[in-house]
Figure (tube, one colour):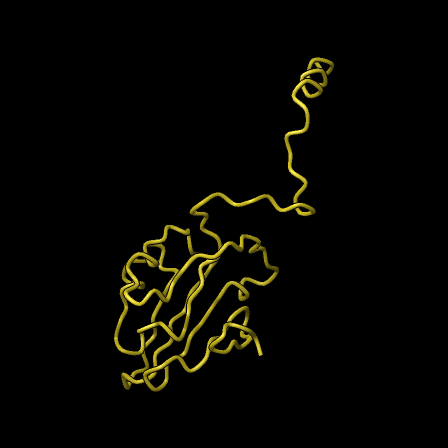
Length: 139
């Protein structure tokens, strides 16, 4: 039994890739990490299309009791990558990128939060609270 298994393995050759040393090209239409562009998001102006389209409720919109400040939160741990939010976003603020290495030690690192204070994106908090600017980079 064991000899036949070894013989079969020798006939078929190596079937694994050399990842992570060599990255294989991704297929067309690959859905990696969901990204939110705070400058394009219309949540401050009352848009909640993406939140209503999100079946697993990975996107939430919190509105202050006085109706002013809003916070749009994305939980990548809950997101199933269906793309409904991307399709319904009228401003194109949501998109998938090619990043697929999303393993983290702390679940808080899977959260992205955008605060809208005066009708525009004030700042984006991502990966456990690290702030990102308009260009999407930390710092």
